[in-house]
Length: 396
Image 1 (cartoon, rainbow, N blue to C red):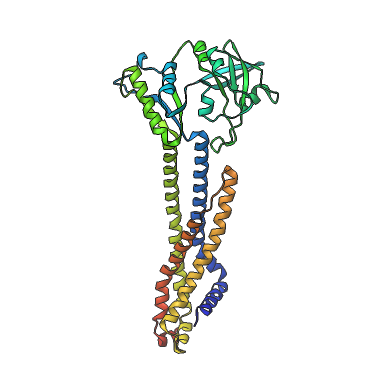
Image 2: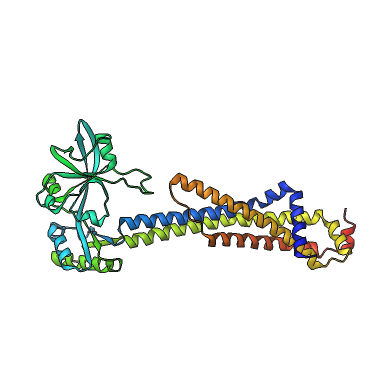
């Protein structure tokens, strides 16, 4: 019996028991579709996160206080605007650097009161954070030096305060101080924001100091001249700060590349764990194939006896049942592949994240499902091949 004839007989056997064959393939279908879905969404999510981090600023880093209860931060340790200027002047690895204070406040305009997040910084921050404006401009160094009451607001804040009318030139009251809107941030199209941007307001940090009555700076953010210079920029910044304040180990740093690596590590681990769990479905599917093949061997015992009496060899009988097991696995894997494509596409549309189909993962899933078919089909095939033809012919 040749290979093609064995495949035809296997297909006829599967078609003759459609429901049983479908239930047998169910474990393979679920396993392959789960692996492909998890792989597509995992790689798509990782690509989106990397894109988000790139737009956040691949060369970006930050300096913040290292809080130690045994050695608390004193007034002599706090960041100053002179520190920021010194880092920019001294370090060749730093392209831009700016102080940043985050605060919250209630603002008013035309009888409406809204809670907002305030970011007080300098003009350089727009380049560090890759801020995009839909209208107007970001404040300048001149605005900052003159302590002007100007603000850049987000789209959601503009819509809430001014509806659909233009926000540029409008007044916003922060406490009893009127701020003039000079810029409108572009809407943040981010997978994390789910199409929503925060109610955010940027103001010059010198203006913030005059309003708050404090010169405290929460943190400093910078941008290195290139991705390879990020570590040097951080090292220079920390060294300059410690030297200027005559202290040690008072400050720490983060950088976007390390954050990106951490996120990729976490998402990779999660995808691997879920894929391993999905792989259990393939194992269960293999057990189902073994079970149904053992049933098939029992049902076809007389057929096996007749074939052996007509001269069929053990290898022919074994090959026939292994091919049947492989065909079940192959069609289960094919259905699972298309199901995985469909499910990952639907989920990606819902969460607004493009699926990335890894053909390597498809090949692995198919190879594993075929391996399951051979492994779990071997014992029933061997049992069928080595039956005694006389006993098989007399089987009722």
